[in-house]
Length: 383
Image (cartoon, rainbow, N blue to C red; front, top):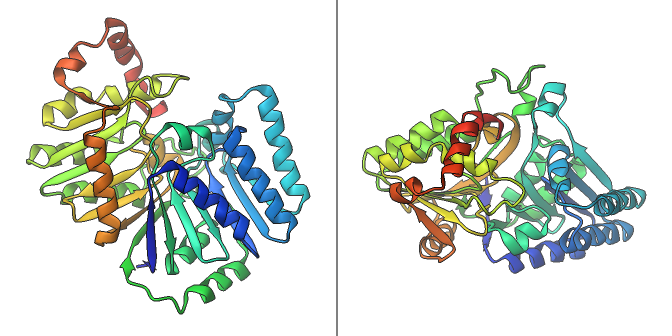
């Protein structure tokens, strides 16, 4: 079980961004960053400029971006922005940095959206940022996101795990990070769950693949262990059937289950992700699950069980998180990890941006919306 000597919650969007930039600007020998996508907006430009400057002053910079995620992110950008982003990647490579667009090995995986969704940033200073956020304005001025800055042995574990995500990791950097944390007092116990399903599938990719996925399995265990309360945040709540069943079991045995996810208008490009979630509304509400929709977007991934256990990271409650995307979560029973997560849930519960869904409000949905749910909901696995 890895440990941390410090854990700083980064719920405030400005605080996380400043921490990220400070890490890049103060790095002396190496800096690793993995993300789902980078947008060529003010945030992407500032981060890439900082990475290029770091590489030019002698820092070994490794950037891993998911190829599928970057294509999705490209929908948000103009042709000029996509060209400028490619030029920034090329400039980082020309300066000596490693830039990898991750793609899984089999064609079926690539066609069906396989990739990596874990967000890790770590440097030679011995600190790592583990987050739900991408390098985009949406993550720092739009949606809710949650990150933690951790120090101690867990930083080395996170760096080593970047290999599983498709990044090249220098063993010398791992050794240096290990030496930097060996003498650090520890005391905050963490579990770290990581699964890249693309590494465990054959040529058919996710088609017919049933796992195991350690992250999904631990989410099911978590729901089944809940005795009093279970709180979940996710971009859109549309888990695979075994995980949905575990959540329903919890609610039916009297556990107060709360789900916080995004409103159908939070993703301007399409409402299909919300439709995938709405297909389960009737079952969830009938079981007593309390559902909130965030008007501007809930992109954090937090789970709190009985106020005695918390997990956070990149895992969205959706089919893709189980069988197509590499995902990871940190978990702990330590109050230093639980209390910030519990405070976030308390804030969300009373926030005016969160609209509670009831059977009555669901019944009042416009006929055209209900028709779209009926038409496209059966394709939840794809959306």
